[in-house]
Amino acid sequence: MVNEYEIKKQICEIGKRIYNKGMVASNDGNISVKLNDNEFLCTPTGVSKGFMTPEFICKVDAKGNVIQANAGFKPSSEIKMHMRVYRERPDVTAVVHAHPLYATSFAIAGIPLTEPIMPEAVIALGCVPIAEYGTPSTEEIPDAVSKYLQYYDAVLLANHGALSFSDSLLNAYHKMESVEFYAQLLYQAKVLGGPKKLTDAQVERLYEIRRQFGLKGKHPANVCPNAQAGKPSCHGCGGKCSSGKGADADTIAMVTKLVLEQLGK
Image (cartoon, rainbow, N blue to C red):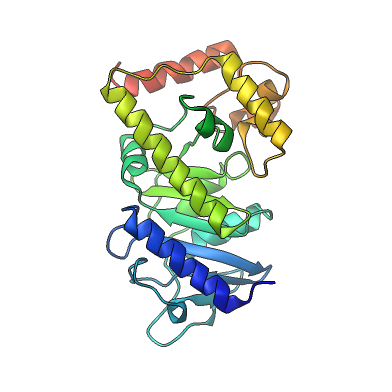
């Protein structure tokens, strides 16, 4: 088992990565790792994620209360958001919150990342919805994120940034990186006249590949009744297909129409 000091070093390394890649500016962003059901390590508030050392890292309980923090450091004000993820997703052991440029631009524009344009993104992410706007450091953001936790492993935060979570810190970071790469590709494809999207049949084949690989986490390939039945997935349904009724053609057409209207098409 990796000791706490090594995990703190890993958090600092991931902090440097998101800072060096321009996914955060100044003191933005936060990272946490679950040690057990009542102990979590997290980054402190008011500190650049690119310049942390292990002694910066705080330890909190499942309610976000401080267990241990060195003088001058206190947990991120967004710890409530992290704790909600851990409480509602027992499979998650790490959470990363950042403000990647392209993904955050989509979040600010109110456009979810739901267009199937690249096999790797379809397999790894499926689609990335937007959680409704909430005031930072309040319960508003955790409440907004909660609606999507059972259906996705990454969400955009309206007018705020992005959140990713997984079964390891490295995987949570990789998801954040994938979200940003997906967003950048989608943006640039739109600049070039619009992406040529994968067909429903192509998406379903990719979903089947994901199922065959047995990849962990939440994904439309596993939670969308249509996809499970071999029908066109309700891509971008925001988890509404979890009712078990799936999304009919009219619903899919409506979502597509709304997205295109937002894009000014």
